Image (cartoon, rainbow, N blue to C red; front, side, top):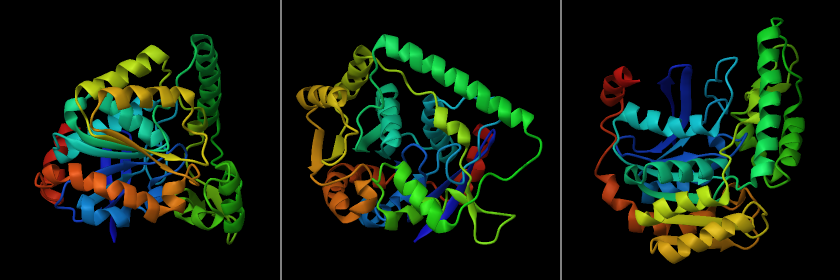
Length: 325
């Protein structure tokens, strides 16, 4: 059903799950904060026929992708650059984007910076990650800096290689369920945990969370309203096809994001938004069929023109592209 792939980067590799025909350039799917490509485990197979193929990426520090080196601050900008690295690796000139939560924010930032490099974008329960008042942005920046400095120093000082606290799988499910604000149904936690935990070397039948703990204090794109509007207007000017799916039982899309939706609605004829009335923040994982039923018609309208580009072969393109990184 899918192929596990690794894309080399200077600090290690980016892992991903490629669904469908690898000779077809894929729809690229980016997960939310502290999740991984497992978040699309139920949705991606439903999209393959319309999309041709789907490549779900583990962003740095998440899932099975390499952690950034000690001393480095995690920043959303690095996730934006991951998309550029993937394009260089496979020698793609344009990409099609799907993102949930933080991943959808990354897609928006990339599309606003490089609208000519994007076929379309689909955002699941997100428009923009943050629109902050300047005073709050200053406080958030200082707080993140202090926490990141502490966590990086801990990595440098800890030479014991001690294993993190471990839990039974059921306990891991419960912890993820609660940490998600109960937006991931308990029975669906396993799809994210498969790439989020490692088996304990000390205790039988116990696991520890293996994602990079520094992600808790990631540096976000600190947007003010004027910047948010400028990014939206660049997407509008390019008339980029853009779909936002909202969860009616989720609070992730607030007044500021609704303001951006208003600008996009007024100035981009290729923008559309849809509501899943009872959808929680992870409705794409809990209600994949309902989500796919909204996405597939959009793919059929805007995806066909890029299917002929191809992935330029699985192996030869990868070998040619390694020299570019």
